[in-house]
Length: 249
Length: 366
Image (cartoon, rainbow over all chains, first blue to last red; front, side):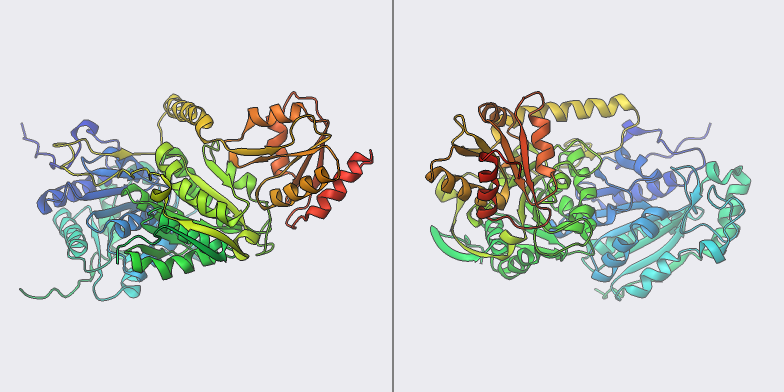
């Protein structure tokens, strides 16, 4: 029998097994985040804010102080917390709809204001909690409940390129990256750098995590992985877009 | 730096917006979040001038959604945080306010009413009563103080922080463009020197200790899985709101023993009503007034008692029946005629109320 790896210490065991669908990528992103919180030793200083959408299910995921907000409004709540008490490490956790559509003004303005907050945005190319409608990140041609014949970019527009946009509007002290649940160690490294950037008081940090939604994609395990690895990463290239220059000690 | 903004008492002649900013300082507010909209802009403008001298903070946000939600964030850290808005900004702010209502977050908001609907005028109205009292997809579990003078703007801004932090319902100072922009004399004071003890704000997040080891983690949510779960939370909140009512309700009244007309007005219109009643009484007429200071919770029993003794009521407001709707609801079952003088978005003078009362007393429908 294979031995299960230990849960991150910062996880809340009482809410496990978690409430995400089988095959959903949220659990992987939150595992990476949990390990990062443990490694940085900041469990007592973190405030985790979760959006509405599938991300709302993480409201009791961690043994860290957590605030569930409204759809798109996690960024301003976390900005408000950080402004009032800069000692706290704030993490705004949201989906692509919350971050890129209904809350896009908050993303843009928090980024340009250079608020010292860390945003983690999960991109699964659809509004999953509401049943699989088109999101800003839905791929050209992709079928969703509101693009049943596939996303026609001439009518429904083009996918939102989040990290590309954020890196264009932030200063050199910002950290901006796109990872994928298919590359756990890389994603975890990005999340760690995003939090370290905030802890150092340097600047705004943003990580988009490419993720999976077999429930709404209507895909089996193999096709889920293929969509993520073959299609999504072509539209949304993973990597670091902005890494602040850190002074050598 | 860091000393008290007001020592002793200080006479001042200033705008209402300035009075709100000074009151927030005197109340020990730590941070303001705001977005420009007329006629409340000067609250931010005075705050940003005063705040750095007393190590206070300010954030100008991208819109009123953000102003409301960042204020919630500030409150969650255990700071006295507040915001101010008006008109269409008040509409947007109902979203964060419904979250504050749901999660019992003691947010303080100053509303300086302007004309509506839509952008309308930047000047004045009493048309944000329904929105401020009952806005959002909730049950109106809020406290709304309707002020009528600069002294009251000052007094009730200080009081709002205490009401909010004591009972944990969103609390509003409901003013208007006239109160915001005109200058008037008032006395600024340090609440401690008047024996007003400020309620200590407790942090919701970031308390000492490692969550899950030395303390339980704070998990705040506004989403529920099942209907009964929501009902349980709301039932408790509504019970606590009902228990709070007698401690919070405020009103004033005059000549309520058997008047021929009982004038009902709130806010700055109440001042015209009081002047009208004074003059009519002076010329021998039996006219009184009833003024709700808290529009939420509403002084129901007190108004019913006064209204039951009156021959008729005259509801006067700068809106097309927003106070009237509340009055009717609270007087349900009472058999007393209700007359109205409704002037949406327009100021009301004592002379207009006197004329209206005289017409009613002469038995004529105005």
